[in-house]
Image (cartoon, rainbow, N blue to C red; front, side, top):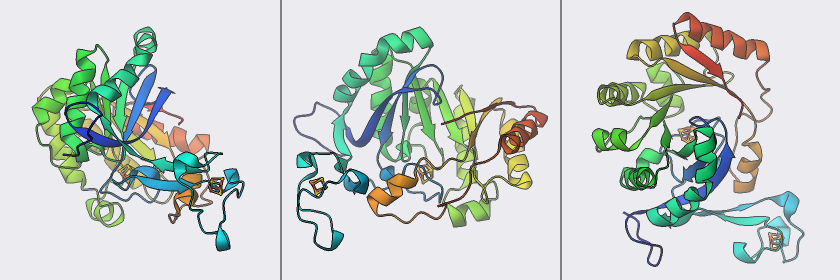
Length: 290
Ligand code: SF4
Ligand code: SF4
């Protein structure tokens, strides 16, 4: 468990961002808390800043005014907090449960008005189940509805505790073929499905999410296999998430390689085809923008 003296009692986690007024992550107006750290490596990941569990520094070249020496274009020696333009930024800092709940609670009026709440995302927030459950429980105690966005593909420490604290689980269905999923992303769909059965048996409300990624999850066989698996598990709704390139600049800022550079967005017809295939499996399917 991480500790952070002076930031409140209880577990802490490294948080990259608290994003207000999100519309696609659990119903109504959401405040999304991004926990840092993911054991998986989806080539299309749009949150590369949340892969490493450690705080890291990003550099957005377009904001840099070269106010400090950068010999050969190397990063300057200025600390991120002293960068005058925000070009250099420290991503991730330890946050305690009570500190984070107080921040999220600022949006309570929007939650009440819209039927929204807080969504914990990442990264893979199941990496920090102690913090996750404590945070969800504290939000609930403060009257804030809760959602968790996850692969659900890690062992669950205490499924009953998670289900009791979470109003809705948003669970990803990506590469359906197990061998290919393990090889490309490291995600084991069988682990996810076993966890899903367990949480559904405990009364969890689950929404499936299907990112549609050209060359990885957009082929007919993958879409059909995912749709049928979702229906078979007894999950009634799937959100179809079309591929986008919003994460591209973040890879540059972090100096990480990005393999999907230049891959075009899906057409409306492509997305409609995926929605129709899901509906044919008996699901309520909704196409989401980001
Ligand atoms: S302090 Fe910021 S703006 Fe100045 S050189 Fe460094 S990164 Fe660029
Ligand atoms: S599981 Fe999510 S956060 Fe982790 S690499 Fe895949 S898309 Fe990124």
